Length: 174
Image 1 (tube, one colour):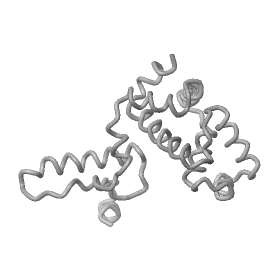
Image 2 (cartoon, helix red, strand yellow):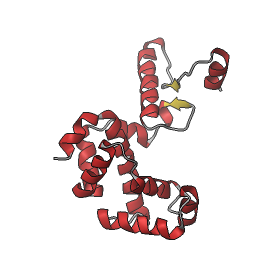
Image 3 (cartoon, rainbow, N blue to C red):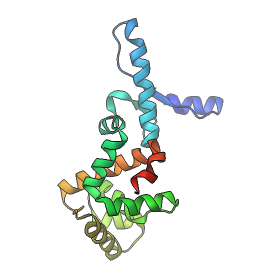
């Protein structure tokens, strides 16, 4: 509401974020820093909320604290090195990665084939083909809950890695 009001009144794009609750004036610098961090995290992960609250960022806040090496280790563990190199090459060349978009949307739609095929405007069999291709390339089964969770977190980490450590992508491809 605040963001929309400011945007309509002064015609400027603004960001709104909320830090931690404070009980004394001495805690204000920390609250300000957490509000700044909430804004950074919200922008990195392109969250849909209009106001980022530090206390409600959950897994995004955790991922934002990871080092580049930790990110790469986890992505290699989940996706495998060959798959990861292939994906980074696609991203480096600024080409759309249809396979990752498909898997991300499949997980966002609670692993529902019908909903995902409608959202992607593809035939059900095309979606099943893409899912099978992903599963074979990674050795994971994104239709299972456990692997789906691991893959979903790895996709978030990949998004974070691409935005925060773009200079390390070439080193990751070696």
